[in-house]
Image (cartoon, rainbow, N blue to C red; front, side, top):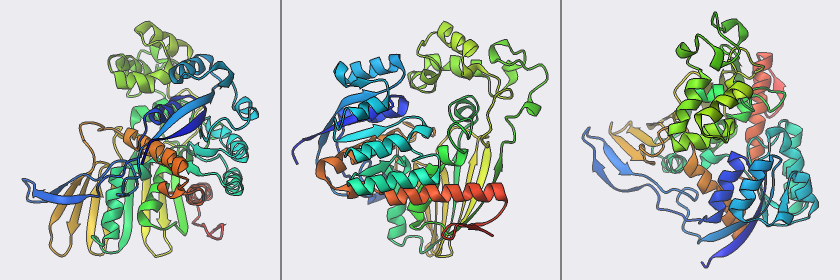
Length: 460
Protein backbone atom coordinates (compact mmCIF):
# COMPACT_ATOMS: atom_id res chain seq x y z
CA UNK A 1 0.00 0.00 0.00
CA UNK A 2 1.32 3.41 -0.88
CA UNK A 3 2.01 5.95 1.80
CA UNK A 4 -0.98 7.99 2.88
CA UNK A 5 -1.03 11.14 4.96
CA UNK A 6 -2.91 11.65 8.22
CA UNK A 7 -3.03 15.01 9.98
CA UNK A 8 -3.10 15.34 13.75
CA UNK A 9 -3.67 18.04 16.34
CA UNK A 10 -2.34 17.75 19.89
CA UNK A 11 -4.11 19.04 22.99
CA UNK A 12 -1.56 18.84 25.78
CA UNK A 13 2.08 18.76 24.69
CA UNK A 14 3.58 17.28 27.82
CA UNK A 15 5.53 14.04 27.90
CA UNK A 16 2.63 11.81 26.80
CA UNK A 17 1.39 14.09 24.06
CA UNK A 18 4.91 14.68 22.78
CA UNK A 19 5.66 10.96 22.77
CA UNK A 20 2.76 10.10 20.49
CA UNK A 21 3.36 13.15 18.30
CA UNK A 22 7.00 12.24 17.70
CA UNK A 23 6.05 8.71 16.76
CA UNK A 24 3.41 10.04 14.40
CA UNK A 25 6.01 11.79 12.27
CA UNK A 26 7.60 8.56 11.17
CA UNK A 27 5.00 5.98 12.04
CA UNK A 28 4.36 2.85 10.06
CA UNK A 29 1.75 0.25 10.79
CA UNK A 30 3.35 -3.14 10.25
CA UNK A 31 2.03 -6.51 11.29
CA UNK A 32 4.72 -9.01 12.22
CA UNK A 33 4.95 -12.75 12.40
CA UNK A 34 3.14 -14.53 15.20
CA UNK A 35 5.17 -16.26 17.88
CA UNK A 36 6.43 -19.73 17.32
CA UNK A 37 8.67 -20.75 14.49
CA UNK A 38 11.66 -22.95 15.04
CA UNK A 39 12.36 -23.44 18.69
CA UNK A 40 15.69 -24.44 20.10
CA UNK A 41 16.61 -26.10 23.37
CA UNK A 42 17.81 -23.92 26.17
CA UNK A 43 20.60 -25.14 28.45
CA UNK A 44 17.98 -25.94 31.09
CA UNK A 45 16.23 -28.36 28.81
CA UNK A 46 13.20 -26.16 28.21
CA UNK A 47 12.12 -25.12 24.75
CA UNK A 48 12.97 -21.51 23.95
CA UNK A 49 11.22 -19.62 21.20
CA UNK A 50 11.82 -16.27 19.64
CA UNK A 51 9.62 -13.29 20.34
CA UNK A 52 6.44 -12.37 18.62
CA UNK A 53 5.79 -9.36 16.62
CA UNK A 54 5.90 -5.82 17.75
CA UNK A 55 3.28 -3.41 16.56
CA UNK A 56 -0.01 -4.54 15.18
CA UNK A 57 -2.47 -6.72 16.99
CA UNK A 58 -1.65 -10.32 17.65
CA UNK A 59 0.02 -11.14 14.36
CA UNK A 60 -2.33 -9.13 12.12
CA UNK A 61 -0.96 -9.23 8.55
CA UNK A 62 0.86 -6.19 7.17
CA UNK A 63 -1.45 -3.32 6.30
CA UNK A 64 0.98 -0.84 4.80
CA UNK A 65 2.74 2.34 5.83
CA UNK A 66 0.93 5.47 6.85
CA UNK A 67 2.62 8.80 7.41
CA UNK A 68 1.29 11.46 9.73
CA UNK A 69 1.88 15.15 10.31
CA UNK A 70 1.13 17.22 13.39
CA UNK A 71 -0.48 20.43 12.16
CA UNK A 72 -1.78 22.12 15.33
CA UNK A 73 -1.11 22.21 19.06
CA UNK A 74 -2.70 23.56 22.22
CA UNK A 75 -0.49 23.75 25.32
CA UNK A 76 -0.74 26.18 28.25
CA UNK A 77 2.96 26.16 29.18
CA UNK A 78 4.66 28.78 26.96
CA UNK A 79 8.11 27.18 26.83
CA UNK A 80 6.72 23.71 26.14
CA UNK A 81 4.34 25.12 23.53
CA UNK A 82 7.16 26.92 21.74
CA UNK A 83 9.43 23.86 21.71
CA UNK A 84 6.67 21.61 20.42
CA UNK A 85 5.66 24.02 17.65
CA UNK A 86 9.26 24.40 16.53
CA UNK A 87 9.86 20.64 16.53
CA UNK A 88 6.82 20.00 14.35
CA UNK A 89 7.10 23.21 12.27
CA UNK A 90 3.60 24.30 13.15
CA UNK A 91 2.72 27.78 11.86
CA UNK A 92 1.88 30.41 14.50
CA UNK A 93 -1.78 30.62 13.52
CA UNK A 94 -2.19 26.97 14.54
CA UNK A 95 -0.46 27.26 17.91
CA UNK A 96 -2.83 27.80 20.85
CA UNK A 97 -2.49 28.26 24.60
CA UNK A 98 -5.78 26.50 25.38
CA UNK A 99 -7.52 23.48 23.84
CA UNK A 100 -10.71 25.56 23.68
CA UNK A 101 -9.03 27.94 21.24
CA UNK A 102 -7.93 24.96 19.16
CA UNK A 103 -11.51 23.67 19.11
CA UNK A 104 -12.87 27.13 18.25
CA UNK A 105 -10.76 27.06 15.09
CA UNK A 106 -12.86 24.19 13.75
CA UNK A 107 -11.60 20.87 12.48
CA UNK A 108 -7.95 21.43 11.54
CA UNK A 109 -6.88 17.78 11.35
CA UNK A 110 -8.12 14.24 10.90
CA UNK A 111 -7.38 13.25 14.48
CA UNK A 112 -6.49 14.76 17.82
CA UNK A 113 -4.26 13.48 20.60
CA UNK A 114 -5.74 14.52 23.95
CA UNK A 115 -3.09 14.44 26.68
CA UNK A 116 -4.34 17.16 28.99
CA UNK A 117 -4.49 16.65 32.75
CA UNK A 118 -6.88 13.89 33.85
CA UNK A 119 -9.62 16.24 35.02
CA UNK A 120 -9.58 17.89 31.59
CA UNK A 121 -10.22 14.84 29.43
CA UNK A 122 -14.00 14.75 29.19
CA UNK A 123 -14.76 18.27 27.97
CA UNK A 124 -12.20 18.34 25.13
CA UNK A 125 -12.96 14.75 24.10
CA UNK A 126 -16.66 15.52 23.69
CA UNK A 127 -15.99 18.83 21.95
CA UNK A 128 -13.49 17.37 19.48
CA UNK A 129 -15.76 14.39 18.76
CA UNK A 130 -18.56 16.83 17.93
CA UNK A 131 -16.17 18.54 15.50
CA UNK A 132 -15.61 15.23 13.72
CA UNK A 133 -12.11 14.46 14.98
CA UNK A 134 -10.91 10.91 15.56
CA UNK A 135 -9.48 10.80 19.08
CA UNK A 136 -6.48 9.28 20.80
CA UNK A 137 -7.31 9.85 24.47
CA UNK A 138 -4.81 9.43 27.27
CA UNK A 139 -6.03 7.28 30.12
CA UNK A 140 -8.04 7.59 32.23
CA UNK A 141 -10.94 8.50 29.97
CA UNK A 142 -12.39 10.77 32.66
CA UNK A 143 -12.42 11.19 36.41
CA UNK A 144 -15.99 9.94 36.82
CA UNK A 145 -18.26 7.38 35.22
CA UNK A 146 -20.82 9.83 33.85
CA UNK A 147 -18.18 11.80 31.95
CA UNK A 148 -16.62 8.63 30.53
CA UNK A 149 -20.02 7.47 29.28
CA UNK A 150 -20.62 10.90 27.73
CA UNK A 151 -17.32 10.63 25.82
CA UNK A 152 -18.35 7.26 24.39
CA UNK A 153 -21.76 8.62 23.42
CA UNK A 154 -20.14 11.61 21.66
CA UNK A 155 -17.78 9.37 19.69
CA UNK A 156 -20.66 7.10 18.69
CA UNK A 157 -23.01 9.84 17.48
CA UNK A 158 -20.25 11.49 15.42
CA UNK A 159 -18.74 8.33 13.97
CA UNK A 160 -15.39 9.15 15.59
CA UNK A 161 -12.79 6.49 16.23
CA UNK A 162 -11.92 6.65 19.93
CA UNK A 163 -8.72 4.98 21.10
CA UNK A 164 -8.00 5.11 24.82
CA UNK A 165 -4.31 4.74 25.64
CA UNK A 166 -4.45 1.30 27.23
CA UNK A 167 -0.98 0.68 25.86
CA UNK A 168 -0.44 -2.71 27.52
CA UNK A 169 -2.74 -4.21 24.88
CA UNK A 170 -0.18 -3.26 22.23
CA UNK A 171 2.87 -5.20 23.42
CA UNK A 172 4.25 -8.33 21.74
CA UNK A 173 4.15 -9.89 25.20
CA UNK A 174 0.37 -9.46 25.34
CA UNK A 175 -0.07 -10.81 21.82
CA UNK A 176 1.83 -13.98 22.70
CA UNK A 177 -0.21 -14.60 25.86
CA UNK A 178 -3.48 -14.22 23.99
CA UNK A 179 -2.31 -16.51 21.20
CA UNK A 180 -1.21 -19.18 23.63
CA UNK A 181 -4.55 -19.08 25.43
CA UNK A 182 -6.52 -19.05 22.16
CA UNK A 183 -4.55 -22.09 20.97
CA UNK A 184 -5.60 -23.99 24.09
CA UNK A 185 -2.05 -24.34 25.35
CA UNK A 186 -3.13 -24.04 29.00
CA UNK A 187 -6.65 -25.37 28.60
CA UNK A 188 -9.30 -23.16 30.17
CA UNK A 189 -7.94 -20.21 32.19
CA UNK A 190 -9.21 -20.55 35.76
CA UNK A 191 -7.28 -17.86 37.64
CA UNK A 192 -4.90 -14.96 37.06
CA UNK A 193 -2.50 -13.13 39.39
CA UNK A 194 -1.13 -9.81 38.19
CA UNK A 195 1.33 -7.47 39.95
CA UNK A 196 2.08 -3.87 39.13
CA UNK A 197 5.34 -2.95 40.89
CA UNK A 198 5.12 0.83 40.66
CA UNK A 199 8.60 1.38 42.10
CA UNK A 200 9.50 3.20 45.29
CA UNK A 201 11.01 6.26 43.62
CA UNK A 202 8.43 6.36 40.80
CA UNK A 203 5.60 6.40 43.33
CA UNK A 204 7.30 9.19 45.27
CA UNK A 205 7.81 11.14 42.05
CA UNK A 206 4.32 10.86 40.55
CA UNK A 207 1.97 9.96 43.38
CA UNK A 208 3.42 11.69 46.44
CA UNK A 209 5.08 14.80 45.03
CA UNK A 210 3.65 14.87 41.51
CA UNK A 211 0.48 15.61 39.58
CA UNK A 212 -1.36 12.43 40.60
CA UNK A 213 -0.89 12.73 44.36
CA UNK A 214 -4.48 13.79 45.20
CA UNK A 215 -7.78 12.16 44.30
CA UNK A 216 -9.60 15.49 44.10
CA UNK A 217 -7.13 16.79 41.49
CA UNK A 218 -6.79 13.69 39.33
CA UNK A 219 -8.47 10.56 40.65
CA UNK A 220 -7.84 7.44 42.71
CA UNK A 221 -4.55 5.62 42.18
CA UNK A 222 -6.35 2.58 40.78
CA UNK A 223 -7.70 4.74 37.98
CA UNK A 224 -4.80 7.07 37.23
CA UNK A 225 -2.14 4.34 37.31
CA UNK A 226 -3.72 0.91 37.23
CA UNK A 227 -6.66 1.18 34.85
CA UNK A 228 -3.99 -0.06 32.41
CA UNK A 229 -3.77 -3.27 34.36
CA UNK A 230 -7.47 -3.84 34.94
CA UNK A 231 -8.03 -3.37 31.20
CA UNK A 232 -5.16 -5.77 30.45
CA UNK A 233 -6.56 -8.48 32.71
CA UNK A 234 -9.92 -8.18 30.92
CA UNK A 235 -8.17 -8.35 27.54
CA UNK A 236 -6.22 -11.48 28.47
CA UNK A 237 -9.07 -13.30 30.19
CA UNK A 238 -11.54 -12.39 27.46
CA UNK A 239 -14.35 -11.30 29.79
CA UNK A 240 -15.31 -8.46 32.10
CA UNK A 241 -15.48 -9.26 35.83
CA UNK A 242 -18.94 -9.69 37.31
CA UNK A 243 -18.02 -8.99 40.95
CA UNK A 244 -15.12 -7.22 42.65
CA UNK A 245 -13.78 -6.50 46.11
CA UNK A 246 -10.80 -4.35 47.00
CA UNK A 247 -8.58 -3.33 49.89
CA UNK A 248 -5.90 -0.64 50.10
CA UNK A 249 -4.90 2.57 51.79
CA UNK A 250 -2.23 5.23 52.18
CA UNK A 251 -0.04 3.45 54.72
CA UNK A 252 3.46 4.89 54.57
CA UNK A 253 3.65 8.38 53.05
CA UNK A 254 1.99 10.03 56.04
CA UNK A 255 3.12 12.68 58.58
CA UNK A 256 3.27 10.18 61.44
CA UNK A 257 5.96 8.20 59.58
CA UNK A 258 8.23 11.21 59.21
CA UNK A 259 11.69 10.41 60.65
CA UNK A 260 12.84 12.40 63.63
CA UNK A 261 14.74 15.46 62.51
CA UNK A 262 13.45 15.37 58.92
CA UNK A 263 13.13 18.75 57.21
CA UNK A 264 10.34 19.89 54.90
CA UNK A 265 12.72 19.76 51.91
CA UNK A 266 15.34 17.17 51.07
CA UNK A 267 18.02 19.80 50.43
CA UNK A 268 17.78 20.89 54.08
CA UNK A 269 17.37 17.46 55.64
CA UNK A 270 20.00 15.88 57.89
CA UNK A 271 18.43 12.42 57.51
CA UNK A 272 18.22 12.67 53.70
CA UNK A 273 21.28 10.45 53.01
CA UNK A 274 19.55 7.49 54.66
CA UNK A 275 16.10 8.11 53.15
CA UNK A 276 14.97 5.84 50.27
CA UNK A 277 12.89 8.69 48.87
CA UNK A 278 15.60 11.39 48.74
CA UNK A 279 14.73 13.86 45.99
CA UNK A 280 18.32 15.08 46.00
CA UNK A 281 19.66 11.60 45.27
CA UNK A 282 17.01 10.78 42.69
CA UNK A 283 17.06 13.88 40.55
CA UNK A 284 20.76 14.75 40.67
CA UNK A 285 21.52 11.18 39.58
CA UNK A 286 19.38 11.75 36.46
CA UNK A 287 21.85 14.28 35.08
CA UNK A 288 24.25 11.59 33.84
CA UNK A 289 21.60 9.50 32.06
CA UNK A 290 19.90 10.78 28.87
CA UNK A 291 16.85 8.55 29.40
CA UNK A 292 16.36 9.80 32.96
CA UNK A 293 16.84 13.39 31.86
CA UNK A 294 13.94 12.87 29.46
CA UNK A 295 11.89 11.38 32.31
CA UNK A 296 11.51 11.95 35.19
CA UNK A 297 13.88 14.94 35.33
CA UNK A 298 12.17 16.94 32.59
CA UNK A 299 9.01 16.95 34.70
CA UNK A 300 10.99 18.60 37.50
CA UNK A 301 12.96 21.16 35.48
CA UNK A 302 14.11 21.93 31.95
CA UNK A 303 17.42 23.25 33.30
CA UNK A 304 19.47 20.06 33.27
CA UNK A 305 22.40 21.34 35.28
CA UNK A 306 23.17 20.69 38.94
CA UNK A 307 22.29 24.29 39.75
CA UNK A 308 19.03 23.99 37.82
CA UNK A 309 18.02 20.82 39.63
CA UNK A 310 18.87 22.26 43.02
CA UNK A 311 16.80 25.37 42.28
CA UNK A 312 13.82 23.23 41.28
CA UNK A 313 14.13 21.14 44.44
CA UNK A 314 14.38 24.29 46.52
CA UNK A 315 11.36 25.99 44.98
CA UNK A 316 9.12 23.35 43.41
CA UNK A 317 7.01 20.41 44.59
CA UNK A 318 9.54 17.71 43.73
CA UNK A 319 11.94 18.70 46.49
CA UNK A 320 9.41 18.22 49.29
CA UNK A 321 9.67 15.61 52.02
CA UNK A 322 7.44 12.64 51.13
CA UNK A 323 6.11 12.69 54.70
CA UNK A 324 5.15 16.38 54.65
CA UNK A 325 3.01 16.76 51.54
CA UNK A 326 -0.69 16.96 50.72
CA UNK A 327 -0.91 13.56 49.01
CA UNK A 328 -3.84 11.24 49.73
CA UNK A 329 -3.82 8.46 47.10
CA UNK A 330 -3.18 4.89 48.24
CA UNK A 331 0.33 3.44 48.19
CA UNK A 332 -0.83 -0.17 47.94
CA UNK A 333 -4.04 -1.87 46.84
CA UNK A 334 -5.42 -5.27 45.92
CA UNK A 335 -8.45 -6.02 43.73
CA UNK A 336 -10.16 -9.41 43.69
CA UNK A 337 -12.31 -10.30 40.70
CA UNK A 338 -14.84 -12.97 39.81
CA UNK A 339 -15.65 -13.41 36.11
CA UNK A 340 -18.97 -14.60 34.67
CA UNK A 341 -17.33 -17.91 33.71
CA UNK A 342 -16.36 -18.52 37.34
CA UNK A 343 -12.69 -17.70 36.76
CA UNK A 344 -11.01 -15.48 39.35
CA UNK A 345 -8.42 -12.75 39.29
CA UNK A 346 -6.19 -11.02 41.83
CA UNK A 347 -4.46 -7.72 41.08
CA UNK A 348 -1.87 -6.08 43.34
CA UNK A 349 -0.48 -2.57 42.98
CA UNK A 350 2.33 -1.52 45.32
CA UNK A 351 4.69 1.40 45.70
CA UNK A 352 7.15 -0.71 47.65
CA UNK A 353 9.04 -2.44 44.86
CA UNK A 354 11.71 -1.88 42.25
CA UNK A 355 10.60 -0.06 39.09
CA UNK A 356 10.29 -3.11 36.89
CA UNK A 357 7.88 -4.75 34.46
CA UNK A 358 4.53 -6.14 35.52
CA UNK A 359 4.50 -9.78 36.58
CA UNK A 360 1.75 -12.25 35.81
CA UNK A 361 0.72 -15.84 36.45
CA UNK A 362 -2.16 -17.47 34.58
CA UNK A 363 -3.44 -20.81 35.83
CA UNK A 364 -5.25 -23.06 33.35
CA UNK A 365 -6.74 -26.53 33.41
CA UNK A 366 -3.96 -27.94 31.22
CA UNK A 367 -1.06 -25.57 31.76
CA UNK A 368 0.45 -22.55 33.50
CA UNK A 369 1.95 -19.32 32.17
CA UNK A 370 4.29 -17.07 34.12
CA UNK A 371 5.63 -13.83 32.71
CA UNK A 372 7.59 -10.69 33.57
CA UNK A 373 6.64 -8.37 30.73
CA UNK A 374 9.34 -9.69 28.41
CA UNK A 375 9.74 -13.44 28.94
CA UNK A 376 6.94 -16.00 29.22
CA UNK A 377 7.34 -19.51 30.61
CA UNK A 378 4.66 -22.07 29.78
CA UNK A 379 4.43 -25.36 31.67
CA UNK A 380 2.43 -28.13 29.97
CA UNK A 381 0.65 -30.36 32.51
CA UNK A 382 0.55 -33.36 30.13
CA UNK A 383 4.21 -33.47 29.08
CA UNK A 384 5.64 -31.65 32.08
CA UNK A 385 7.81 -29.62 29.68
CA UNK A 386 8.47 -25.91 29.79
CA UNK A 387 8.62 -23.55 26.83
CA UNK A 388 10.12 -20.10 27.05
CA UNK A 389 8.95 -17.29 24.80
CA UNK A 390 11.15 -14.20 24.55
CA UNK A 391 8.89 -11.33 23.51
CA UNK A 392 11.22 -8.37 24.11
CA UNK A 393 14.86 -7.49 24.60
CA UNK A 394 15.55 -7.71 28.34
CA UNK A 395 18.57 -5.45 27.92
CA UNK A 396 16.65 -2.73 26.12
CA UNK A 397 13.88 -2.01 28.62
CA UNK A 398 14.43 -3.71 31.97
CA UNK A 399 12.21 -1.31 33.85
CA UNK A 400 8.52 -0.59 33.79
CA UNK A 401 8.42 1.69 30.73
CA UNK A 402 6.21 0.89 27.75
CA UNK A 403 7.99 2.76 24.94
CA UNK A 404 7.39 0.08 22.28
CA UNK A 405 3.71 -0.14 23.20
CA UNK A 406 3.37 3.65 22.91
CA UNK A 407 4.78 3.39 19.40
CA UNK A 408 2.48 0.52 18.46
CA UNK A 409 -0.55 2.41 19.75
CA UNK A 410 0.32 5.50 17.70
CA UNK A 411 0.87 3.31 14.64
CA UNK A 412 -2.48 1.58 15.07
CA UNK A 413 -4.37 4.84 15.61
CA UNK A 414 -2.90 6.42 12.49
CA UNK A 415 -3.54 3.28 10.46
CA UNK A 416 -7.15 3.17 11.64
CA UNK A 417 -7.67 6.75 10.45
CA UNK A 418 -5.83 6.24 7.16
CA UNK A 419 -7.76 3.11 6.24
CA UNK A 420 -11.06 3.93 7.87
CA UNK A 421 -10.77 0.60 9.70
CA UNK A 422 -11.13 0.98 13.48
CA UNK A 423 -10.69 -2.79 13.89
CA UNK A 424 -6.94 -2.16 13.58
CA UNK A 425 -7.21 -1.02 17.20
CA UNK A 426 -7.51 -3.91 19.70
CA UNK A 427 -10.23 -2.21 21.73
CA UNK A 428 -13.11 0.13 21.11
CA UNK A 429 -14.73 2.84 23.15
CA UNK A 430 -17.24 0.50 24.77
CA UNK A 431 -14.51 -1.92 25.92
CA UNK A 432 -12.52 0.93 27.43
CA UNK A 433 -15.60 2.16 29.26
CA UNK A 434 -16.25 -1.34 30.61
CA UNK A 435 -12.72 -1.52 32.03
CA UNK A 436 -13.10 1.88 33.66
CA UNK A 437 -16.37 0.78 35.23
CA UNK A 438 -14.57 -2.13 36.86
CA UNK A 439 -12.15 0.35 38.42
CA UNK A 440 -14.95 2.52 39.77
CA UNK A 441 -16.68 -0.58 41.13
CA UNK A 442 -13.46 -1.65 42.84
CA UNK A 443 -13.15 1.78 44.44
CA UNK A 444 -16.72 1.56 45.71
CA UNK A 445 -15.88 -1.86 47.14
CA UNK A 446 -12.73 -0.51 48.82
CA UNK A 447 -14.50 2.39 50.46
CA UNK A 448 -17.54 0.39 51.54
CA UNK A 449 -15.80 -2.85 52.52
CA UNK A 450 -18.24 -4.81 50.37
CA UNK A 451 -18.31 -7.01 47.28
CA UNK A 452 -19.73 -5.00 44.35
CA UNK A 453 -21.84 -6.67 41.68
CA UNK A 454 -20.75 -4.73 38.60
CA UNK A 455 -23.68 -5.64 36.37
CA UNK A 456 -26.21 -4.68 39.01
CA UNK A 457 -24.20 -1.81 40.47
CA UNK A 458 -24.93 -3.05 43.98
CA UNK A 459 -22.87 -3.90 47.06
CA UNK A 460 -23.20 -7.19 48.89
